[in-house]
Length: 336
Ligand code: PEP
Ligand code: MN
Image 1 (spheres, protein in one colour):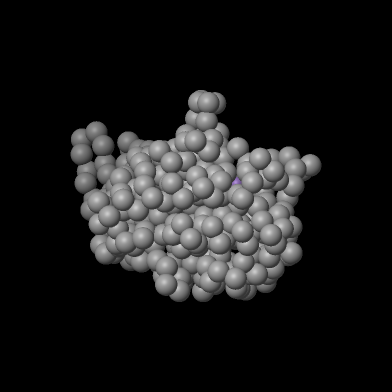
Image 2 (image 1 turned 30 degrees about the vertical axis):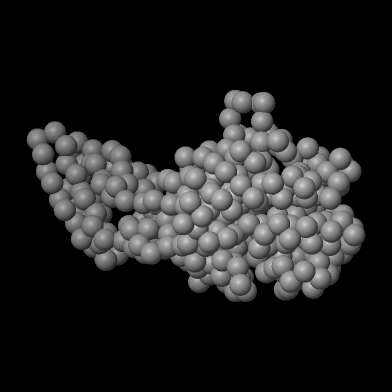
């Protein structure tokens, strides 16, 4: 981190600042030029808030030269993190596919979806029991009953389950859920992230609708700094000016995140596009871009779905996607 001081900054105040920073364990490089005086901070600056420094009357501006996230940073952890759940894994050579309905609607629906996605080669069943919806009048999930139905599908098929937590008030209901999903709208629910840092389950953290990659990684850092290192990142499309698709899949986020972090990165082509026919091409694109997995919405009868029918695949369509994904995974050296 570099601090640029104001011209004619009060010498005593500069010394006080330097003393305070040294007390925080940082080494100081002080460089006084004819026009500009700068203080270079060497050491772990993750706990130094640039805005606190910029508020000082002697400081002109502050620039970060290293990333504010440490635990998620590939620089300090060069090997890929592999997140394991039973026999399924994400990361390293492992490619994980999560599939199932947007929301759990009935036992018949979720068990049928689970059987078909398992037969096609998916390693996890997804299904929302608590649904964050833009309209308060839309179907918002079966809640506790939805979790029970997911557990029935898990028992029937052996597939681990992934479901979204929308409020910490419901955390107790997730005791037998294998992976807790933090949805795009809660990516910066810092209390939720902090609490999930203390739990022993993997967290599937979806990128916020308008969040930068650095913000996504800082949210992962929240969870990791609480002790939970099992975080899976998900690119699920971001808001742009384009309205032809529900969101815009930021495919470059995948290889870039893989450079910045050791955490597994998966892609959600369903929410990224909102259009079922685009799920296959974008799933293939995700594999080739280096993703560690996919999360895809599949419904036995998408035309009757209570949520996100237009982007949901039929089980037959999902079979075809998986055939293609398997071929590409082999080419990319990924194990599915
Ligand atoms: C979902 O996966 O059903 C969902 C609501 O996703 P997102 O948070 O990415 O919108
Ligand atoms: Mn959905």
